[in-house]
Image (cartoon, rainbow, N blue to C red):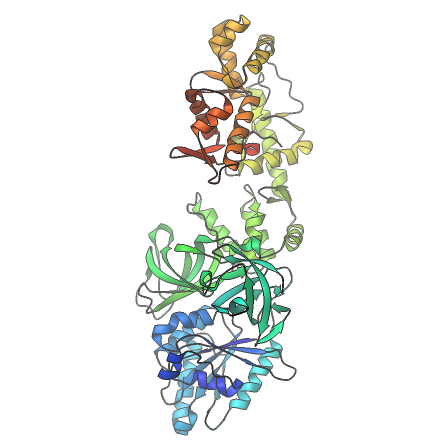
Length: 640
């Protein structure tokens, strides 16, 4: 169990920890000289038949609240320390507000220095503390009287901590991936880099290969120590020190996380549920600059509130934090916000979507999604998300990372939600009822298209998606059509989709012209042909031929560039592959038109025209004078 102190400066927090554990937590020379805590201090208490109790002693001075916030992340229990002579003071109130906002509901209030005052004064302060606890919705906290000088109440407090440690109910370790919040980093001669902190989820073992995030450095665990004793593993809820290989002490520190590699996904936009403290005199307005404390991280952010609204004191609401630099966080992580000058705590909240979109098309739907993401049970959250995303599906990789659940757990959640995976890369899931409804919708759209265009071979996947579920990811839609093809009696031919029963009534003249020009176009390869060139080569009338060529362009069997050159679909798949290969072989993942020209074997003008078509299709994206890949060609051309 991890216990943190809280309370005003010089109320005896460090003295109390020393009385309980025998350990002096003030380690810095300045702390010893000034007699006050500046940074976090740590101690351990081992008792018979009791899990080890780890203490995080936090500074009480208002200037060091940021250090206090780094210390109370991931704790199980809090000791609110109030000196009987001073009574409740400003940092007593602020620290307790922080504890409440972080969702810490187990702890004890300790009245210290009782040997210095009268019984009446102790009783007076007890009532002050009781009222304060009630205002913070922490009335369940017991109040214990202590004196480090006379040892009054110390044994009683120690026993209370032991009982709490034995009774603590931990979140299930299995089914989650390892996360560790770093609060210190230093180097030891002969050992290298050491980081200390709290294990949030799962466990770590010697030899594990992990990632330091948000930096992204790959590290290996060389050793683990708990209370200065070497161990082979540490689990959720334990404080430990990790000896890391692969990173220097200068490259890591407070604010970093050590995680399993797939959890490394830094973010700069986070959707949250925020609560503003009752004590605030003004509402929290849109675009207010704040300091965000999450885990051991502190970062400046802007608060974006829907439609420029505000959150009143004592109220809660959804908001998006636009962060000044990338951080690591997941759904359910608690956070505190302080004012622009970092002098006052404004409120706090919980992360809903750690990878929030910059823009939202449908704000009503988004509110429903955020309500689903606020559910703490992953099974309930996934079911609710599947219900509100019945026509777009749920990105399972995004969900599993956000809620920190493993693939095996996600698979079980899908079964319980009566849903299944319809697409991979990206992996999307839909409710089985949604799949049936969308399949019927696709079938109806094809039926109507065949009635309106009986001569056409089929409808392109792109157009079919626009007519049925325009909000769905293109690759997911392509996979969905394949998924329902057998049941709905659908046939896919390249990029065209048709009902199996459909018989094209295309005129014989069109079919004859198409059969005649295909070999001619294929022979020209990357250079393509104009309508006039094709007419000269085949002896066909140019006006009739041109109409047929444009029909084939609409059907997706031909592609046209701005110079009125026509290419077979196979040619443009070849061009897309050339662009992909150029990007993959470049250190910057980009290429220029001249490189594409040389690879394609065409002149510069034609190379640019071809690239412009690839841009419109979404295969590539122009960035200045270079291009990068935008969508997989398998998605654009609906090929396996």
